[in-house]
Image (cartoon, rainbow, N blue to C red; front, side, top):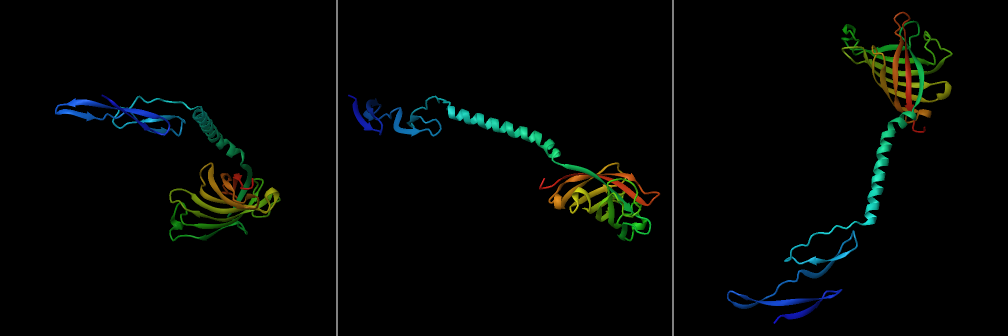
Length: 252
């Protein structure tokens, strides 16, 4: 006859039946495990409990549950991702709107009694180079609000000085390495300065160089300048270059 025994599993009691079966070598008792063990496990996501399967029993087909709170979280995450994508698409235009734009005229006076650009160093082969490769020029050039030739004399339109140096750094064309400060001595930016660094291929119509810093109203400035030649100085000995400045300061 089958024998029944009762085991306690915390929440309820289950009955386990012991069966007798006849084997090839005689009668023997075989204990068959219940289809489900008495151990309960809790699901941390969906807050329901289920009986853990016995290792000797086949697993039942899995059931899927949808938790409303999980679905709401997914919608929120999707909305955040969409907002971030929209912000990334709009950021270039916003950055451009934050830039301050203005123009000054750079006067590089190479001739006359008081030149503002003087060669201070050169290589042994510079004079034989078609591009003056290796020459270094120190500058203290006037910056004005208009393109009129100044002839090194102080102009009523002067708003600052371009101070620093440029190096003939290209053996194939007239390519200058510009390393200078625009120091403003009058106007809205008096007492401030911009630091400009980059390659200036003087035969190109427009050249772009980087603004890598500044002082005063331009403290920690970033941006760029576009240079275009107004007068090559072939007759006057004074090269006039228009600089369009696009700058953003940390305080802006």
